[in-house]
Image (cartoon, rainbow, N blue to C red; front, top):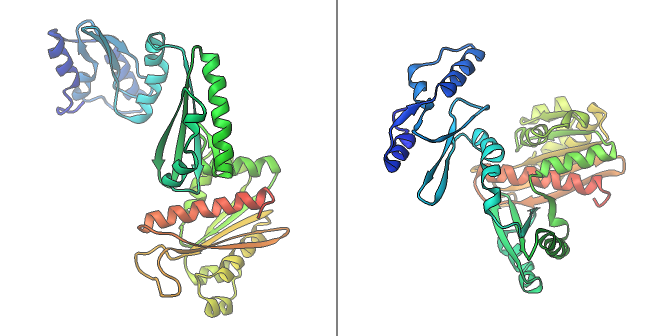
Length: 342
């Protein structure tokens, strides 16, 4: 609706046609504002203006419709920039219009990985394309994960899928448990599904991550089936009062230590009654580090019926990166313990 959005005017100019108002789109925009209990401003009306002859793409998720035009030999689509609205419009309205234009001779699998840098992932997969002619590997770094895209092309879609499946099998074999899922899987979602499948309940105690682990877990559907509590015990006094961590342990080993991480995990498991408990304590920076415990030092612990497992890690990067790495490391250890490998 703002004056700096010149998309429709620019397209109309390129086509040499005027802008026309689509009354059905205007009515949709007005009704959406009414459902939200708001009054539509006059500036929103321009969202119903399109180049003459354009094919309007309805937007059930927002106010701005999209549109499609023919420009020479090309079919061109314009969609709103809000990701949630754009993705839905692309899936529901654009893809059906263009699917027939593409040859049906390819198949792709997206593998989600965590635990190795992009360079090492690439080194481990060197030669896969040579072993499987017709397969192309692609890499996408999305901190702290690496996505490996396995694309296969063949004479038919079925042959491409068979070729892709063989290549995926080799990729998984080379990367082992670094691959945690496929497609739109998330690390927290996979860990959560594993807990639900095994019937485990979970409690979390966080210090340096400040609730990030709980946020990641509750950002996925079904977390209420296994997550009992997430205690952000940032201050030492909170670790003692809420989790029962001994003041002597904190004084003797420091708040950032394996002993305190273990006590936090055991404490939150005890007070919540959970089957498993995850705890994290560390120095996220940029200050607070020492020679013995530099910035990025993190201890994660998982307590369960068979005892408590503690790991020490050292991460590099800014505060947010250290916190993210720590959250992933904690979930990784939790996954290992839940699967019986811890």
